[in-house]
Image (cartoon, rainbow, N blue to C red; front, side, top):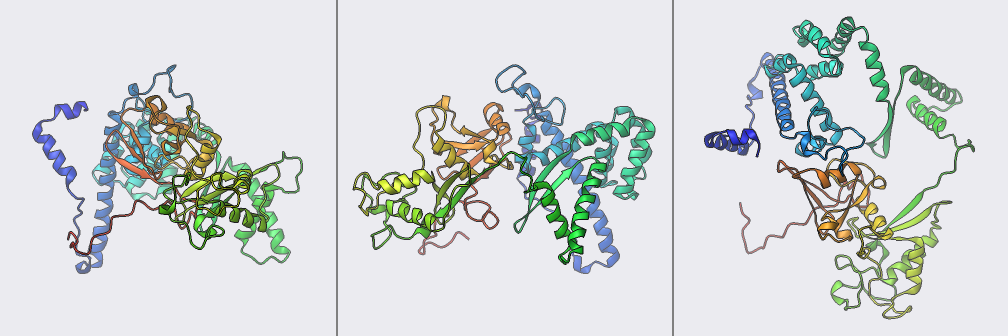
Length: 507
């Protein structure tokens, strides 16, 4: 309980609780009866209200930051202490504060870090700009322009620039306001422009994100002269293709020229690269086990059924048919790489993961209980078995990374190949090294789970992870599944129980 919670009276606490439980409401005017002038005035009032709400949000964010001091973090030199990487943008607060705010706002950690940074700069360092937003006199968008330009400036520069430009800022476009802020800051500090350039170059990098429909955007941020030289080379290659008779849009030609210049397939001086191919095989698409007239039901399995998953057996017949299909398609591992097979149910949930060599061995060996030639319904493949020690087996690592695909913390998209296999119930507290107690967490969120106070992680049997913040907000992530990730961003949640026909619905 915070100091503010202890100091307020019982009446104040009851009032706060009542306000928090109310449904959000917005006063709306009947649009149909408004004139054009009244609609324009209402739109302007709406912008002022948004600015007020944004200022209130920033104040709430800074209030939450005050409840999370960095004294709660592992101190330097102790286990779990941060060695590298960004912490909280608010000085004196916990490095895990951005993660908590990301869970509260249901957004990514980088976005929450930006919200924290803007709130700190405007509330603490530019209170006059924040007050203008709180009064509805300045939009939050323009306030963020102040924060973006002057966020890393000295207090002396802020004290000189803000009073000079704030009175007329509401009437300026964002571009003009930014230009005037930069010019005023340079006039107040001759080294301001050089520091901004050095800081900008330190943020340079290459980023990729999916834009939908099978396309992705590759963004390279680097010094302007280098970017201009790259653009010239890309455009010349595209224009050469256009001159040669390619009448496709120039944007398509530039994109292909960029890819060709980067990849350079004719360059043999680069080190050889290889990869891993994973074949996804839905169990239902494999048909009936060989030699049987119907699929084997889970109720027909005896005590020797083996490692079935959710009552679904993966039989020798399934494995032989899968092996035959891979042979017919001539699927092979890339040179120097390997080939894995992921067996899923019809929803895309991972049932088993196996290498090509293991698949061939299991299909050839057949059922150990009934013989190689038997067409029984015994399951030969499933989730990897638990291990006695702390470190997961290679089979468990393969299963987890195929099941989770990314770090499972809400809002984190770090690929599973750069994550840890974490015991949700800690191993030292009796947690088993089993797939039902393991999930992929990046190093940052692994440390959060281990060392941050008040967080709670629960992993359900179907792989659903529930994360609860110290402030009581719970976010849920589910394994993404191995079907089309565009059509199926995540596996469906638990099915609701059907309502009995004899009982009326509760409404």
